[in-house]
Image 1 (tube, rainbow, N blue to C red):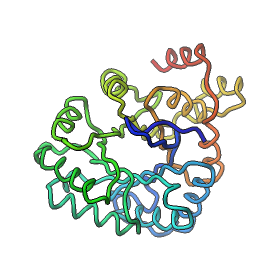
Image 2 (image 1 turned 180 degrees about the horizontal axis):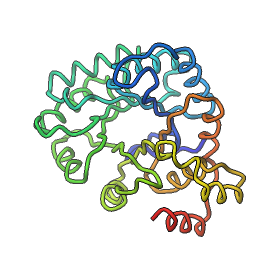
Image 3 (image 1 turned 90 degrees about the horizontal axis):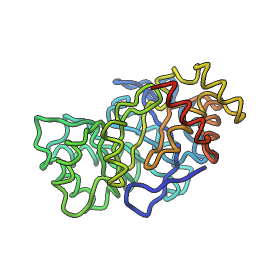
Length: 273
């Protein structure tokens, strides 16, 4: 597995991790595939995808429970756990309480990275960031970040911090969703904030793309691997594809450790412009 620096820290995280949306349910819990989900997460970890992203929203917390169960078999320091607080829980006390609930569901002593799932303009950002810093002070959160924030929102959040900084902005980013290239990506690259790309395979569209399949022939790789490698060759970008099938987990893991050449990157970007 290839590793990249987390924001402006000395910590290294996998260039490709695992997302868990709809693992354990969508907006409500689903217990029907629990064993399969736990096994998939364990296999992913064994393949080197030790970065696992979840959220209190996913399966109304059940996704966190499954992640917690899966990582029990591994040394804590070898796993990097990301979870997210709902926008409606961004008041100071509510955010603190939400973090402790997530910690309990994950059955962990601390959360590696805690993210604001999305902005909430009805709640002062200073109140939210004060709570985030409090969690770092208490040691139950190692690093903090945001998700689905624009440049101005990131600047406002950062301006409220006195002891730490945001290290991640988790946003949708793929060959067919490139809006962040206009402003968010350059800002994050300039300020050493990791872009954690969700839906990096275009919600299942890119693995079926004939053009990417043809590019893949040159490298002995699949269309999905080409799409993921295109992402992680960019500075400050890591990807968190969701997979539950073992062959897809292996495919995702093998999208690292090699690079598309410059000419093919340009060709791909021109095709998906």
